[in-house]
Every structure is written in structure tokens, then in C-alpha cells.
Length: 181
Ligand SMILES: [Zn+2]
Image (cartoon, rainbow, N blue to C red):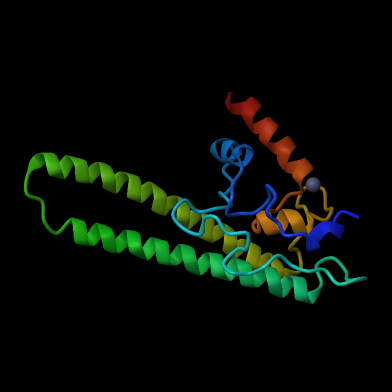
């Protein structure tokens, strides 16, 4: 019953492109990767042109077709992020070519620091995506690593790198807040 409304267009709160406020908040506390990159792919109900998976009647959870679907999403996402990293590197190389005065240099160093942080975040996200692809290879994808239940297609569409069900994730975030706040 958890997956029966998958056929509806997922313009609800769960699409990766449209990060809702609750998700944006959890981004700050959790080390988990943000579902939507700040620079690309905003405003679309599909992720990288890949429509949400349409479950067939009687289809099992994490069927081969579903694995293929999520692998496509993860690989498209990874490719997109790698491009973003390349752009950052190119930008920094171009920008550092000419440095007329000290003030410009200071501003630029600040900009570069931000760029480097962004790139670092992207690299971590790429690693997470690679782990998810590995999980598909291993047949572990789509199941909560904490309690073992099905993470669910809807949640995975919204957050393809999710390794926990929503309950375990929520609990982990509460614990994290208690430890750090
Ligand atoms: Zn769980």
C-alpha cells in the first residue's frame, strides 16, 4: 500500500529538484547530501529527464527494472556533479590568470574559498552516489541499513542516495541535534 500512488505526477514535496523547507533545514544538521544541487536542475518534476518509476501490478520491490531505473538516475546525477566540479576547476584557473591589485586578490581568495567548499561538498556527494551504485551491484540498494525495511520508491525518487528509511533517518537527525546542540 505504501507504493500505490506512484502513478501520480510527483509534484508533491518529495521531488529532488524542489527541496522543501524541511529538507533544507535537515541539510544543515545532517552530513547527508542535499537532494538537489544548488546550481542545476531546478523546477522539474523529473530527475535528469527520468520520470518517476511506474510500478507494474504485482511487481516486487527492487525488481531488476527498478534497479536499472535508479542506476540511471544515480549515474546521471554523478555525471552532472562531475561536470560541475570541472566547471569550478576551470573557473578558478581562468580567474587566477590576472590579479591587478591586492583588493581584487582578497576578493578572489574569498570566492575561491567558497568554490572549494562547494567542490568539497560535490565530491562527498559523488562518493555517496558511488556507494549507492555499489549497493545496487551488491543487491543492498533500497533497504534501510539500520532496520532493514524497504526504504520505498517514493523516498528513493526524492533522495536516491538514501540509506535509511524515513523513521531511522528522522531518529538519527534528532540524535545528531542532541549531540551538537
Ligand atoms: Zn530504518
